[in-house]
Length: 202
Image (cartoon, rainbow, N blue to C red):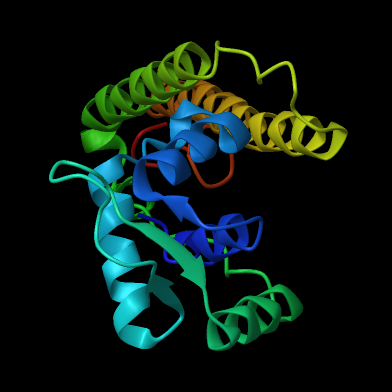
């Protein structure tokens, strides 16, 4: 799970005590199924938060197969408020294997690089299709205006990033193919002009 997920759990518990399965369901409602958080993951996180003193269980389960209810503690509320006031999480590292391959590739390896670009493009398409399918289910009818705004904004962010990556990959493919064509025609990749003939070649 994303590290900040624990704070989202605290935020949901601020709305009132809840079971792990209900918290997982609320994640689906608020963020969309694309978050792929399940009851087991929520239960593990609740135990972790309980050890930190941020949440507490409200007694044993009501039935042998039941789920414990948890509520946020004053320490947990302080942690949540501090998180809200803090800086946003840093953007994931921009370093990617394709960047290294791009920098280390010469004309002789360009065809292999083009294959890697196509693989990356297909991966982006697959992620975009999967995200769209996972988030096809609408918000509940009783969703608040703020929850609707949040879901729409999250969807826009994810899909914009994937579409942007696809556009970058397609532009990169065209540029590599152009450089490869220039190289095969004897055009200098650095200057874009034909190499000057020497007197011996004249």
